Image (cartoon, rainbow, N blue to C red; front, side, top):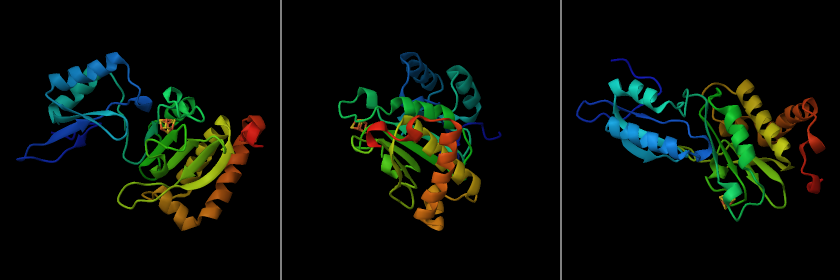
Length: 240
Ligand code: SF4
């Protein structure tokens, strides 16, 4: 049987191939109905449920012949559409958290919609948080957005928690919500246009040099700000 679509092959045990599927759960927020549905589908096809680090719920140990049926029963979109793409936009609960400094949830959801399934030179993760606690390991994401008390939205890039851990670099500070959105867009566009396939964003920054990367990305950012007539040129008013 052909490898089923939108499923990941798991460890082969006694020659038995099983697959995991992961429905899209934007921002980690899920309706009670969808939560129940995931449970029902897992039960029907004897799957194992696992909460993932990417704020989703995976159904594991599915037989190849059940994968398509499981997707039909779920009626949900796959969390990841292809290997080389934006894998997810993780976000902290910001609006619901007493420590929040800037409400980052709306921005996070906007970024999730914008980047769902978008191709990229390598697997790319975006993280968004409402304060410097950076819950969800935003400092280890390829692109990170942090809402701060003193420096508006801070944008970081090049983080990784994988095989070659790398702390993200600060690319811009003192941005308002629109400024943060277009700065993420500028970083993504630049990386997507210029980096070789297979190159992680952090490695691309190291190859280019951080100051050159910041300079180039700022050029793209300024054009976007002008094109979209962004308030205060994307800078947080009280930080001007
Ligand atoms: S990053 Fe800050 S605002 Fe977000 S959940 Fe953590 S403590 Fe709360």
